[in-house]
Amino acid sequence: PGEPPWIRDTKYRHFTPAMVHLSTEAGLPGKYRLFSASKARYSDAVPVAATGASSALGHEAVASHAAAPASGDAASLGAVDHGTDNSTHAEDPSLGADTATHAEEDPSTAAADHGAADDSTAAGAHRRLAKDGAFEEFLKLMPRLGNLVDKAIAASPSKEPSAFAKESPQPVPHPNFMANGPKVHSVTWPALFEPKHLLCAPKSIGQNKVVALSPRGVGAIVPVAEHHDDQVQAEIFSLDGLNEAGKLAGAAWTRRGLHLVTSVGKMLQCDGHSHIDGRWACQAAEHAPLPISAGNELLAAAFKEFPEDANAASQGPLVALVLKNFPKFAALYRSIDGAWHPEGEVHVPPHSGSRPGLSFDGDDLLITLNGGEVHRRPIARGEARQFHASPADGTTREFCSACVAGQGTLLRLALRKGPSSALWKPELITMP
Image (cartoon, rainbow, N blue to C red):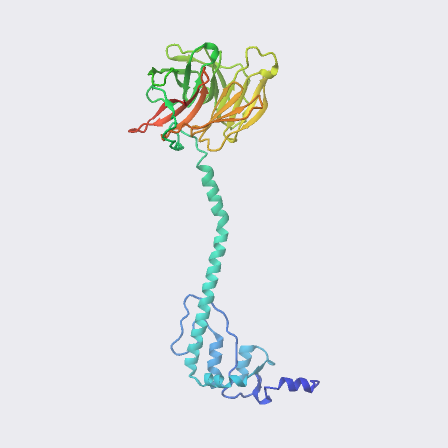
C-alpha cells in the first residue's frame, strides 16, 4: 500500500512477480539458488575434500550452494545465509540458463569447482598481504639499520692513529715527464725512526739545520746540504721530560730552543740549540695552560714566539690548535697578561688525513696535508692565500709536516714505505 503504480511498473518492467521469491517462502523452484557472499580466508594450505564437501576453511557458501537444490529447505537456508527475514532475491532472466545449468550440476562437482575458485582467490589475497606485510616490516627496520650505520661510521674513523699510520697514504698523480720532480735529500736516518714533526732552525742562530721529532720524543738533527745529492748524517737524540707530559702534538724551534706542545695541552721548553750526549733536557714552560676542555685532545699544534722588540701586549706568543672534537679548523690563541685569549680561526682544508701538520713561518700559518699539499694562511696581514702543490713523482708517501729553512726553501717531511719491508722511512723533500 502506498506504492505509486508508476514505480511498481518500472520495478517490474523486466521482472514479473513469478520470478521474485522471498527467503521466507515455504518452497522455491528447483532451479533457484540462494546467493551468499564468499568470506575471505587466508591460509597457505587450502585442501578440498574429494567428496565435494566444504573445505577445511569452513566456507559456508559452498555448503549452502550445493545443498540448496536437494534439500529445498529455503527458510532454513535463507535464515542461515542471510540472517534477515525480509531479504529479497531476484533472478535475472538473461542468466537463467546459466543458473539452471549450474544448479543441475552434480553438487559435489559444483562444490569442488567453487571451492577451487575460492582457494585461488584466497591464495592471491594471501600473497598480496604477505608482500604488504614484508614491506611494512622493512619500514619498521629502517631506523634500526640507520642507527647501525651511524655507529659503524662513528666507530671507524675515531680510533687513534698508530705510529704506522692507520690511514693509507694518498697516491700522488704522476706529473708530466718534462716537469721538474721533487728533490729527496740524501740523509742517513736512524733505524726504526718515524718522525711526524719538522722544525727549521731560526735565522737568528745562523745554522741551516732541521730537527725531526717523533710523537714519543725521539728526534734527529739534520744539516740541510746545499745540494740534495750531498750525503749527510742525522744525529739522534731523545727529549727528556716529554713522557710525563704526554704525546707530542706540535713544536717550534725558537731563538731560545725547542718549544713543545703535548696532546693534553701542556707546554714544555727545551733550552739550547743542540743535545748533550744524546739527551735534550725539557721542563715546563712559563706560559699558562692551554684552554682545552676536559676529555678533549689536540691533534696538531703550532707555536710562534713573540719578537724580541715587542713592546705591546698584542705581540705575545701565538698558538694554533686543532682539537680532536673540532678537526675542521685551527683555533688561534694569543697570550696576553699571562692568559690565553681567542685570536681567530683558520679553516683546515679537507682530506688532511689523520692529522694536519701545523707550523708558523713569520706571520703565516702553514697547513700540511697528508697528500703533500701545503696551504699558507696569512694571520696578521690581509694578503691572499698561497698554495704549494704536492711533490708529484708517482711515489706513494705520507706527508707529515713542513717548515721554511733560512734561505726561504720550503722543506717537507714525509714517510715512505720500504719496497721489501713493512717499515716506513723518513724523507726530507724540497721542490726546485
